[in-house]
Structures are given as structure tokens and as C-alpha cells.
Amino acid sequence: MNYLIGSTILHKKMARTTTVSKDKPTATHSDLETTDPGGVSPTKTYFNWLTSGAGVLYALLHTLLAAFAAQFMALSSKAGMPVLQLVFLAQLLQFIFVLVMTPLFRPRLTTEGRRQTVFLTLSAVTNNVAVTLEYMSFHIVLPGIAFGIIKGSLPLVTACIGYLVLRETVGAVDCLGIALSVAGVILVAVEMMTDPDNDTWSTERLATSIFLPLAATFAGRGPNAVVERSLVGLQGVSVLTINFYGSLLGTVVLLGLTYALETPRWTMSAQTMGYVIGLCVCDCGQTFAAELALRTEKAGIVAAIQTFTVPLAVLLDYLIHREVPSLLMCGGVVLVVAGTGVVAVYTWRGRQRDILRKNFLDSLNFGK
Image (cartoon, rainbow, N blue to C red; front, side):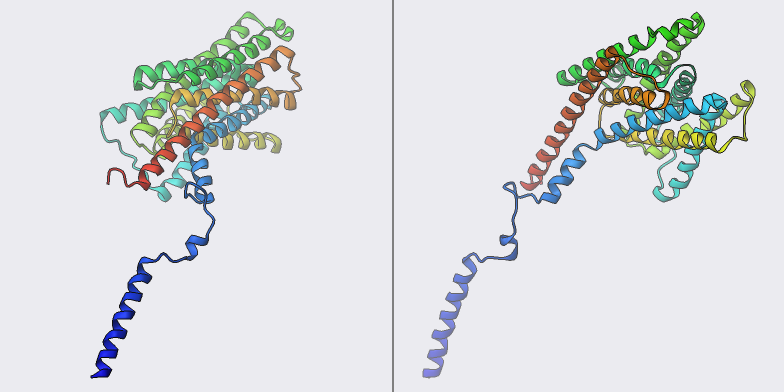
């Protein structure tokens, strides 16, 4: 009997001890780890920072590859390669790359409606028009001059078309950055077009050197950016699908044009082959980089960041062609860099705030 009473008392004490131990907080391994005040690990913070700037980074990557593609185009043209044949080879490599990547990612190649079919067709046409006119202008003038006209008019044209078609607006800070970039590009273009070396040009060549870049912007790059923004960013179409139809159309049409209007050269020196390979790789990379940027950023914002191609082209003109920039041109380059920096930093910070806000709402289980 005493044994049973003692056991009952001991059991009650153990129960009370267990209850207290459950209520009392205990130190765990996770409690001893160092965390930031917001409760987010440094790795996740860095990942969020990098993710928020993905669109800006893709746009900047496009500017770098576009500048090098232009130089390879100019060097290949000087080596005697026909322009249309070079554009054909670039589209052919892009088509082969898409065919290789399609089984890996399995994108949807069929359209989901009439609107998507129309936009895919417009994307294929405007992209090939833009590439052809751009590379033809690089054949006539230095890439810095052509990019000065193309990138100078592109942000305004893209922003206007984007508002009319997609109702996408550009904020006041972005407008300031675009204005700085456009002002800088105008200075660069004016300086290049008034260069004393251009006095030997015929009136026809001077008019062509202005018309081709403008046509590349108004008939190609501007509409193409808005159409691809709608497809990639708003309708969720894969970039592989867009480039499948665009490169297929370009490969077929440009092959016929190069035989109809030019005399193709299929044998070339090792140096010229290196130029052609560099052109094809850079052209393919800059196309995909621009489309990936349009997945998250508005067409006008991406176009504004792409004005950074101008100072890169001027730098490469100096390094490759020994074209020494003047003080006026340097001032224009500074304005371009400042405007691009304003748009890039403001866009990056805006995306970072959006991600932090989303993470905060998710931590509160908002809407669940």
C-alpha cells in the first residue's frame, strides 16, 4: 500500500516537472546561429538582391554582346564578306542553337490563339528587319555612329509604342535617365556626323548612313521590343519559341536574298572565319539576353539601359579602328553612362523592394 502511494506521488511530481519543462524555452542549435535582424540568412539576401537585378543584368549583357557583334560585323565586311550572307550565317547558327535546346526545355511551339500568332509573326519579321538594317549600317559607317543613331532614338520610340500597344508607362526617374542618355547619344552622333573625315563622303552615302540606322529603330528594334515584351513578359511565351520562328524565317529568306543580290563567299581565311564565328556567337547571345530582360522589365526601360551600347561601341572603335574620341564625344558618353546608371539602379532597387515586400507578406501568411 505504501509502495502504491509513493509511486503515485512520484508519478505526479514527474508529470509536473515534464509540464514545466515543456513550457520553459530551451536553447537549440538554430537559436545559437547568427541571423540578420530581419530573420533572413545572408545567402537568401544575396539571392534576392541578384534576382531583383536579373532584368538589368540581362540588358547590360545584351549591350556588351551587341557592341562586340557590331565590331565583328564591321571586320568581316572589311574582309570581303557580303552583308546579307553574314546575317544569314548568324540566323543559321541561332536556328541550330534553338534546335539543340528545344528537346532539353521542351517549349510550346504552337500558338494559343490568333493574337499570339499575330505577335509571333510580327516578332519574326521585325527582328529580321532590325538585324539586317543594323548590320548593313555597320557596313557603311563605324558601329559607334550607327549605334549613336539607333540607341539614341530607341528609348523614346519604344516607350511610345509600348504605351500605345501595352499601356506601359515610364516613371519620372526613368524619364530623367532616358533624357540624359538621349542627350548624350545626340552629342555623340552629332560629333561623329560632323567629323572632318566625312567631308569626302557623297551625299548619297551620308543620307544612307543616317537612314539605315533610323529605319532599323523605327521599323525593327522599337516594334520588336514591344512585341517581344508582350510575348515573353505578358503572355508567357518561351524565348526558344520566339527564336525558333524568327531564326527559321531569317535563315530561309536571307539565304535566298544573298544568292539573289550578292555573290556568297563560302571559302575564307582563318582570320575571317574567326570574325564570322565571333559575330554569330555574339549575335545569338545578345538576342537571348534582350528577350530575357524583357521577361521582367518594361520595353522602354530595357531600351534605355541598352543605350550603354554607345560608349562601349565608341571604346571598341578606339581600340580596334584607332578612332580617337573628341571632348564633345566624351561628354556625350558621360551623359549616356549617367542616364543608363540612373535607369538601371532605380529599376534594380524597385525590383528589390518588390521582392522584399513579397517575402514579408509570405512570412505573415497573407492571403492564405
